[in-house]
Amino acid sequence: MGNDLADVLIVGAGPTGLVLACDLVRRGAAVRIVDRSLAPPRTSRAKGPNARSLEILDDLGVADEVLAAGSAPLPMLKYRDRLPVAETDPWADSAPAPDAPYDRGRLIAQWRLEEILRDRLAGYGVRVELGREVVGLTEAADGRHVDVTFAEDRTERVRYVVGCDGAHSSVRKLLGIGFEGTTAEDQVMVCGDVDLAEGALDRTRWHQWFDEDGAVMLCPIPGTRTGWWFQAGPERDGRGRPLAPTADGFRRLLARHTALPGRALTRAELLSTYRVNVRMADRFRAGRVFLAGDAAHVHAVAGGLGMNTGIQDAFNLGWKLGLVLAGHAGAELLDTYEEERLPVAARTLDLTSERLRATLEAIRRPGGGLDAAITLDTTGLGVGYRWSSLARMHDEASRPDETSRHDKTPRHDETPRHDETPRPDETPRHDETSRPDETPRPGDGLPGSPQPGDRAPDAPCLDAVTGARTRLHRVFAGPRTTVLGFGPGSAAVLREVAAAYGGAGVRTCRVYASHESGARSGPGAAVVDDEGHAATAYGTGASGTRGTDTGTGTVIVVRPDHHLGLCAPADDARPVHAYLRRLHGAGRPRNGSPALVDAVRKG
Image (spheres, rainbow, N blue to C red):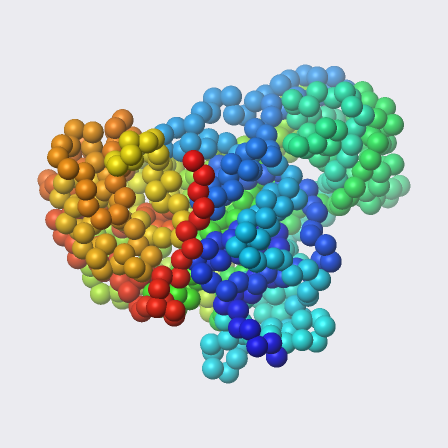
């Protein structure tokens, strides 16, 4: 048995596993990441991060590199009988907003995104261990470790394991966790990366040929001169069964549906057959082992949410493992991973199936295309956790924590059904009004303001010390909880928080209104809301108070994954302390200092 005891072993080095590894290692956790492949997996299945995943990549310090390596989503040119019949830009009416600077995703090959994340991880001194296959998992009798057996008959001990090893997850199978759902054998697509002769097609468009007897879709791969993502309905044999993809088969499909000759396709690799699978694990946790990404849920490709849901799983789990490993939070915090992410996965299965149906209906008509799959829901910006036990209004947070989990949300030792979980789509998007049928309470915020569990809005502002332009998400960046203070009355609470939790992974930030005069000093960061965007986004108004509150300020706790944890009037610090005790008050870091490594930020 190995002598080095890792905090977390991540199985699977795709985007989900790499994001989790980057997040954990910057928190000071001892992380190992393994993959059964002998070389870094090179797959082109996903076409890039959506808007919410870009925010996560920004927090990890790699968004600029992703933006530079990728391209904006392209207009879609639709054909019927080889002739162009319509062009659509699904993002034509979209624009960055103060609260959401990423209004759309980014096209980038999955293998290129993984390269960027591996380089980021290597900067922390961690490299993917290739050619290592997990074949056994046993939780130690003391319940404090997991013994992991590898194919080379070597057993190593770790504190936690996270299976990010895809739809055929060995980790999930070793745990005996069910993966219920359906496979649509009649909904089949062949995929691959291809090269087309230079100049064969306009690379500023995503070309889509939909005919009654099949389809071909070609999207240029950013960062290449002649590379394209190829997707098509498969060739079939005399009995109607789909044939395996081949380069020659791709050439025949190209010649049949497009005006291009088959010889225009000069190379084809990474060929695969895709069938629509809609499945979800019965649970996302078994003791000290977790599932994330495709290991926990798979669904239709419509809307491009597969990789993105996995990235967001990782960002939800990482900070919770980090706080528990550092000794700040109790192990019960880990129950909230499944509590929050299982309902999101269930809704994603429903959403993508709905978008697939809409797309299949759209392409039956000339001019229909993949734009039918794209809605505001597919940006990921509206996903929230209002049902979570971590989402507290001020009057709830100060009570004893007997409601640390909601009975309606399954624990890791219960078997949920898709239709029994809370529905994230019942949480209004960031641009919608919440609680329309309830009387506003102090701390609730102005109509349309975010509530606990919602994504924390961004907002442009000024650094109060240097006067340089910055934004709130830049303040949130890095592995810490952030406590925002609006209004003069919040200063005392921020001082108390800084004194009590400043060494335990909590930062404070005073948000000054442009009209506030006097010295702008105090613990932590400070920004000036010079254009009023922060007050608008958080519903505090010009006075720094929310809703019907007549006090002198508001305090908002923002979790490390940029979701609101608590909103409270500044004249009562008790709920703020109660909430922070749950996340940061269980003990000191093992080494006596905060187990955090701040992300290196650009700009």
